[in-house]
Every structure is written in C-alpha cells, then in structure tokens.
Amino acid sequence: MKKKLTVLTGAGISAESGLKTFRDSDGLWEEYNVMDVASIDGWRRNPGLVIEFYNQRRRQLAEVQPNKAHTILAELEEHFDVNIVTQNVDDLHERAGSTKVLHLHGELTKVRSVRNEALVMDIGYESIAMGQTGEDGAQLRPNIVWFGEAVPLIIDAERLVRDADIFAVVGSSLVVYPAAGLAAVARPDARAFLIDPNDVGMSLPRNFVMIKEAATTGVEKMKKALLE
Image (cartoon, rainbow, N blue to C red; front, side, top):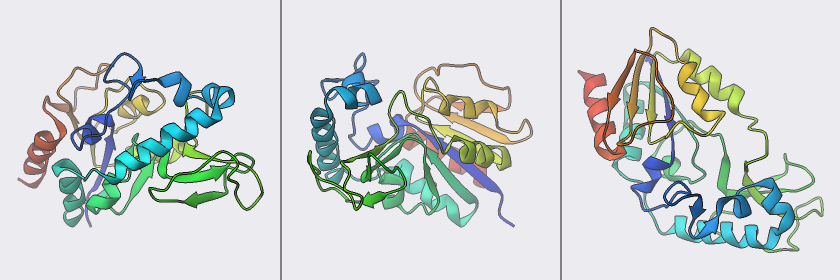
C-alpha cells in the first residue's frame, strides 16, 4: 500500500508560474488594496470592482502554465497516495496532473450564487458581469473564500494532514490562518518538509526538514529524498 503524502501549497508555488500574490507588495494585489477585492466587506462595498478584478485574474490564469514544482507533485502519485491541500485559487495543480486537490480558499474558475453557496458553476476562464445570475435568479459571485468568511474545508484538510505519513509545506508563508495551523496538526512521527526561500511565520516542530529554496528546485530535492 502506498504511503500517504499530503502537501500544503501556497502562493510561492504559483508565483513561479508568473502569478502575482498579494504578499508581493505591502497588501497590494495587482495594484489593488487586498481588502477591497478579497474581503466580504469589499464585496458589499463595490461588487462590480470585485467581479472585474477576478475577471482579470481568470484572463491572467489562462495565459500561464504549471511549473516544475506542480508537475513533480503530480508525478509523485506514481509512488505515493498524494493529496494536495492548496491555499491557491488557480487550477495549476489540476493542469499539471494532480488528481486529488482540495482548494481551501475556493477556485478562480468557478462562480456561485450569492443566495445559495452550494449552487456552483464552472466557467473556466470566462468573465462574469453584474446582473448575471445563477439558476436561482441570484447574482453570481466568485467562488472564493474571502477575508471575513469561514473556511469550510479546513476540517477536511486537517484530516488529510493527520492521516499523512509524509507532510510537506511548499511556498506558504504560514501566516494566513486557519491554513497556517495545519503544520501543527501533522503527526510527530511523520516525515515533514518545509520548502520556501523565506522565513515562515511560525516555529515548526522538530521533525520538519527545511529546504530553503524556491518551489521548483525545493520540490525536486524533496522528491529525491523521498525516493532514496
């Protein structure tokens, strides 16, 4: 039976594909204030701005490709039972070939009704507009978990981390909760890796192997260590 490998990925893995993150420049994301475009209060203040912001993000996503870190994580499915838990809203893990991906913060390529969060539509890289509604007649909004909203999949993510024989964190600063708390959930006897060129926002248990490199080179080193 394959060992269980759970990988928490953050913005750092997608940044190497050319997607900017809001941590790049003092709370600005593509020159927008994060709280204007990535919070429930921002949506209530100016939904039109938020819709256009995510339309731009979808257009940008259509132009980039998965990088080597994404593809190596997908290739590891040959050797391990791999679950990806990602803080990212892009679809680069799926496009690289990963088959089990849990999106903690939602998915950019999907929208949902403001009235019924279970009414989700896959729109790919298309745009939506103010006045565009779902089957229930309610306005469609990005299927994103914003600041100020609950993270419903965190319970599933905790289970995947607890069950893992091997746990890795790739490209996450471990400062955004509740996702950052997943590092503390890993079993003490699990092999554990943290791959990031920067210092992270919390102290980690002793069983973590630190690989202070970008995701593309760091994931390759982790793969070599796991397969030796």
